[in-house]
Amino acid sequence: MAARRKTAARPIKAPAEDLNLNNIVSRQFDRAARFVALPDGLLQQIKVCNNVVQVQFPVKIGDKFVIFQVGAPSTATTASR
Image (cartoon, rainbow, N blue to C red; front, side, top):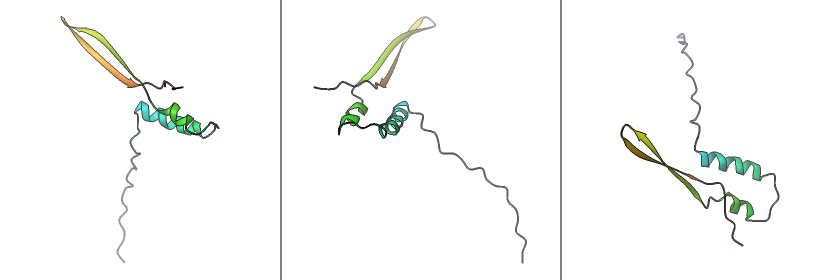
């Protein structure tokens, strides 16, 4: 019988971590939602993002101003009555 060659074990790569803030908040919301008893549809209404917060600010670079704009979904929601 031929001798088997020992090969070095290959490191297992961990899956890439999802660092998208909206996805992180959504997963945490889903985990917490399992522990509360609310009327049908209320959790979904709370979870849905109805607003986007945008911020603009000027930065002086050299002798010019550059406007930076940042936008992100807001976790605040507006409930209709």
